[in-house]
Image: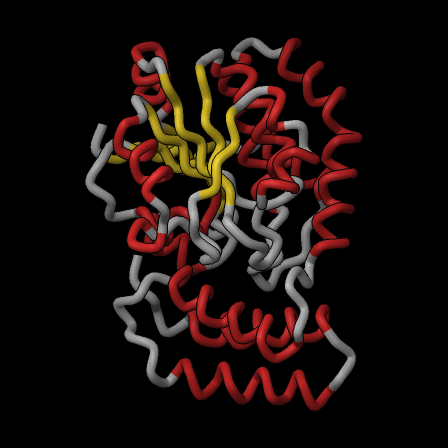
Length: 281
């Protein structure tokens, strides 16, 4: 997905938010905002948003000196999600369609996103998503490919949401590889976050090799790329991964909530809609 004009103020807000989380030094924050503003005027609009996000968060780390500004927030989100895990498992077991319910729960976790200018409440958003109609629902295609698949590559998005991913992975009943970010960026899930979420109990965890807040194949390591093209099925969670992979040349399933109007417009849905979208199937 290309960068739209409406993405530019969002980039500035992300820089400001990350700066404030990282430091109380107003001079450093002003330096960060100035630097990001200067960079944005030269950013090609055909770049994907995660490519620009990678540049911005490198600048955050360089200017503030803070490697993982959202560390404590991620830990709190994971803790809250884990507290909900037993209840969510009961909901899955009691449902008429366990797989579809687990997909809903995984998408509900997608609200835990500190890269958008939107507040969230995990419990309230979960309750809403369990009742919400899908704007795009390619569930039959999902089931058909899953039945044939021996291996599944699952692209993680945010920490905390990762616990909700575990619930879906348990329902897939396949050999799953779970891909995470190489280093901390926004609140995206890293190796440590995935282990803290219990994903090592249900999947092999690998790094994609990128520090971008989304999967950009040109920035990924060879191990990930081999898995990406070899996997019988790829499940991509969240907006950042959609932004990076929406034009990829392989079959793929996107699970996400359209949390901003840019993503919603690109998907041709409404803001806050939930989506299970298949491409190239």
